[in-house]
Image (cartoon, rainbow, N blue to C red; front, side, top):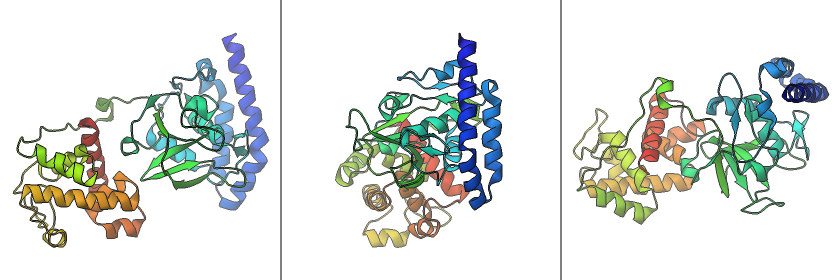
Length: 333
């Protein structure tokens, strides 16, 4: 019976792809990306070789990885972005047209992760992410929507990071990238990848010196910036060295440039004032960008660089900085 189910699923996928071929060719004619059409057809023809019968269960409560190569945040994002411009079609679940949950199910299905069909069921898959500050690219973000509630979401998208999501919004619109806003729920459905398998060591949160702990707590309460984030910035910036001075001239625990410190009215070599100044900056950046990642990029590379690139600058040092701070903050939250 399982073999029959696999064959039926293969035929269904192949039929859907062939039905969407005219639409795909039309889009390719506009973009010149005929390779994407070929990839779509090849993927459909691969059929059972790329998936197992278990992937068709669609049972809520768990996402199943069935691809030979596990899905990752980067592959989810790149796969989702291939369908930018595909029209919204209620009940649609192919590149001929998607509704919100059909789009999510299709993207993850391409990568071997089986998800249920509706947003309400998808909101039970994987594991909960407690806040947007802890969300990662590839997480699912849910919204009450016109046909749902907080406890039974009516809309779903895929988080891209940097305060953005990709989704199939509504009738008359197309798959597009837009601000993530305020989701009512976030779920992580990507299979966990052990840190050791990446070849890079997992960063660990260091113990905060006793004298500094109340200063982080006070600044967090005053400016609404997570205490774990402030501690992580201090660890990455100076290793909790209150008298550190960089080759570029940044000073103190939070590595604030003298000109910036003067504008904030703080002494960067005084730990209480340094933490206060850093919390002020981060609170302002988070409010301005709506994204903790982008706020950290502005802290590291400056708001001018963020403005220039419309988000996190592609500087290797800044990308590593943002990743390191967030990794430590998550471990210490």
